[in-house]
Image 1: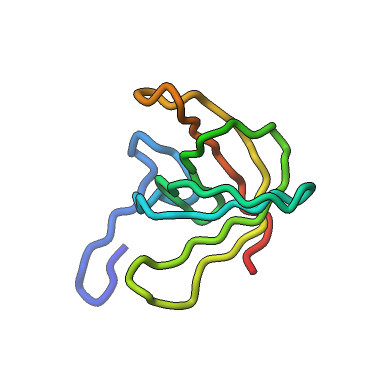
Image 2: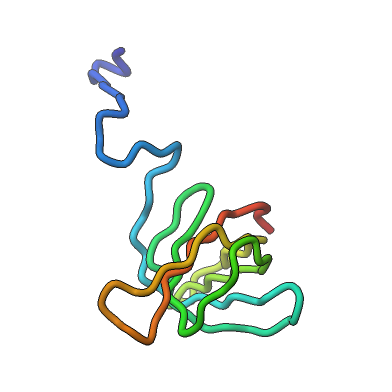
Length: 109
């Protein structure tokens, strides 16, 4: 396949076979739990077109619903706001008091 004289070779011969590539962002995130309206502060480690990985101080339950809000640390707008649901929770690999929570994006606001 050629585009404007540039040969493009697209394949899924990479280690991560996903519909969307993950982007490392390492930025502050707010998670607002739907049931309790409690706000948790965390770090968004990476995000993709259909999900995000967040580092939190407490574990959440699978299928728990929330709203995720990522605001630029450089003052850019708009912010990323999405309705999310917890897909999995893991202990942080190096920090014993942290958890990695994977969220699936259900709706972008």
